[in-house]
Length: 272
Image 1: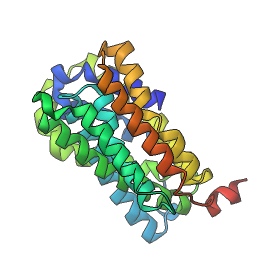
Image 2 (image 1 turned 45 degrees about the vertical axis):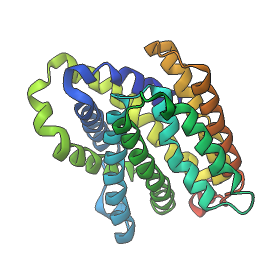
Image 3 (image 1 turned 180 degrees about the vertical axis):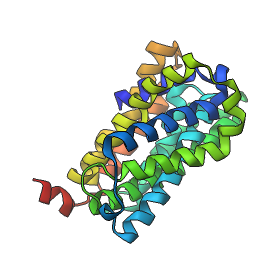
Image 4 (image 1 turned 30 degrees about the vertical axis):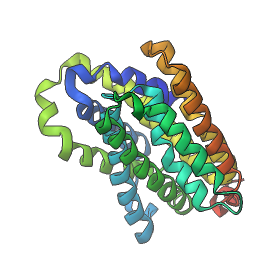
């Protein structure tokens, strides 16, 4: 989570140079190169059905990256992260066994406090991008669990990340290539390591070893991480209502995750 939020905060500085979509594309492109060089996947490593899931996961990964960077161009980091977190919250609620009705209500209250529509200053397009990223993140979690169960190690990332980079290239490539400089390209390598290489690798390994209850409870803290990183690195000072809204979303995420458990996967048991 720390790697994700620091990487996002540093990527915000690129938006003025190459745009939100360009910043997303640069991170994904370098991540794809790094993972292909390090992992060097082979076709025999992937069952046919799992390979198809890897490709789909790559498209979803590209989508969540592009959409979230677009939201960051219009919203504070803490607000955008809390809205995006509604995706995994929805997965936890859908898998919940009991007490599931209270968590969506609590999360909805948190969203209202974050966006404060009664003030009339909310960027609706930014909110829309963040909510679309939330849908992609929900799909990302489900597909990552499926792929992590079917492919050993981190080989799946060497397929999903190039697909994500190609997806981003179709959307952002033509408008970005002419704005790149050697300095921006070098900066992009560091960003790619911070996000997505390190966190996506750790999430894949974590989802293979943890129940969704444990993983979701930990990930529920991400909006709080975003609030702190946004304050320290971007000097985005939230008001009291925004802090309360993030607290509501975090609480809803923890509560929903603890009622939506999954047993540790067979792949993780085999690795042990």
